[in-house]
Amino acid sequence: MLRSALTAVTFLGALQAVSGLLAVRWFASRPAIRPRTRPPVTILKPVCGDETLLEEAIASFCTQDYPEFQLVIGAHSAEDPALHAARRVQARFPAVDITIVADSARHGSNRKIANLINMMPFARHDVLVIADSDLHVRPDYLSSIVASLEQASVGLVTTGCGAEPAGRETATRLGVSHISHSFLPGALLGAASGRQDCLGGTMALTRATLARIGGLRALANNLADDNLLGSLVRSLGLTVRIAPTLPVVVVQERTLHALWQHELRWARTIRALAPVGFAASMLQFPLFWALLAVLLSGGAAWAVTCFLAAWGVRATVAWGIDHSLRGRRARPAPSASLWLLPLRDVLSMAVLAAAFWDDEVVWRGHVMHADRPAVSINLEEEAIPKLMGSGD
View 1 (cartoon, rainbow, N blue to C red):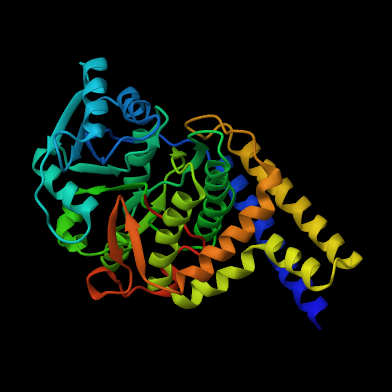
View 2: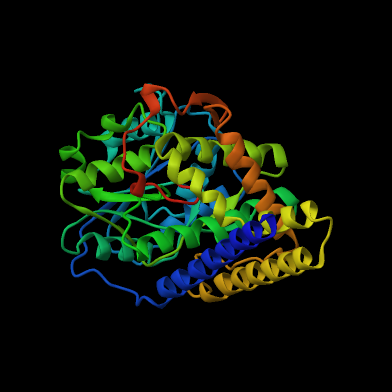
């Protein structure tokens, strides 16, 4: 009985991994799209603290093949190290319309949204693109977003993301594997099956649509602002679309403790929104279940064979994802750390279990609670990505 159950769960996890690869290939095969019109765009980039390659990330927004855009970069303090990087970029690209905002005003419990509210008075254009601080983008980023946004009934455009490590530490490589080989294929699989998730790294909409949902203040007391924004836009009868461009984020966490805190924030946020669907996501870690079979069976031949087969599938899928996305990524993919895949699945399972233990999350050094009314959202289960990792 135990043998059959663990083998079945391992098979289901491997099947989902293969399905994720097929979704990635579908995404990679989508043709690049160009907008019919090119209205001026304001990019809102909230920043906080120093990050590896932050200056390069900001600079990538200054090389867009788009005729007119404004870049607004904001932080809560004029002495924030991120604004030092922003000023260096401003000096490097004098022809780009860059506005730097420092404002300590608070507008609710979500500090990122408070920062954006402070930046909005400086936004001059009607197409708004909210982009996380750590995004590295291709020159066609704005064109892809605007082309997606102008399609019929689309009210909100988002993007997936790939990842690269900030260093050679094991923790950064584990973080890259989670984003590139679990979160991204899961998000694309959801999109291929009809889900409309706002993935958080990019949130693009018109000023008119934002006003119809109550403006940014409607998000000010919610931890999962991206999911709420997507829900509010869908409530208007509009759809959420993933643009066919792939930004890259740099995984900053160089220690397992830091990575644990970051992934636990993702996990507890999603668990608070969709506990049943989140619990069911334990089926997606085939190497955990195969390793458990090895341990419980005392190293039986069938269990070892199952584990090696699952490892082979996961490794093939990881390689296939990186290979398929070579032409879409904003930055080249690092070599996949295939030997870390078993540890990655074990860590993911541990994060999932810990997400049910408490609701405390730590964001940029500030403690918030996923289950409290001020930060919880009543959304449908199907609106929540099945894989952890939406948002910064």
